[in-house]
Image (cartoon, rainbow, N blue to C red; front, side):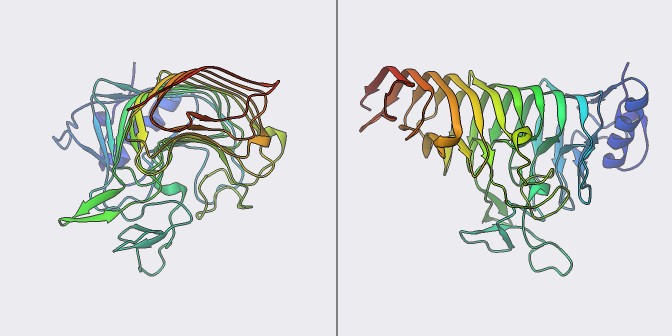
Length: 372
């Protein structure tokens, strides 16, 4: 049993949310099919985020969901969070499952792109990002979390799987203070620009995945494709901005709350042919007081086009990093790391394969370099 937006009336956005709301109190499952039988189209345009409560399964069945040019919001967000929500109540059991060919695609002419540090511009240069809201009165002139693709905040037990994300406006998938979940079979496809009336407009901060404050016990499996900024970024900076504020990169707030916000038990495995156009394929960055423990990276092959490879920063805040069975065309950088191991690494390139110092707590084993 399930609900479908084809069972309701209204705009496409309204019908999808009606199906979710109905399922929340009945079947617990929503299916968005390939065809919108009401409007006789195979594209589902949305004007604002699909909001998911707890105990819900959203199945995307061979469908294409596209942000409209009026949308300044995520594709999907946990319903406990949003503008003006300063006290985010935890949710459990959210599944977002793609079956067949599922595409989430950004707008043809987006209102805003980039993160909270970027100013919108109609003709962006480095440091600014494209958006039609640029210069408009009463419209926020910065980017932020509203530009991200999928956000789960304070969610325990979740799955996101089987989705291709294309030309989204900020980061692809952002996990905030979430736990006991799996992200798998995800493809990212961005190009750091969008073509509007034949002109390429710069889009910044098109990271693939963000793993933020408080995340733990999460498997991220079988991801591929290309990101603009970091393909995955684990960590966050405390900027002192609370939950529900617009100009911040996470909807649940960027204030470090102590041990509860430390990140641990994150597993990156079986990634294929992935890269960052302009930044790092994998970045780990526990800035300030944030602590990161138990990160496992294994069985991955980076694309040679990646601007950089595995980069670990603020290493004094990291314990127990395990890297095994990777093929990389860029050096591994983790200067100063302790309590770590790097095994079975094939570096295809020139120079040093790994910027890591072996010690009593750091094991380096079978790191090989092969010239191009």
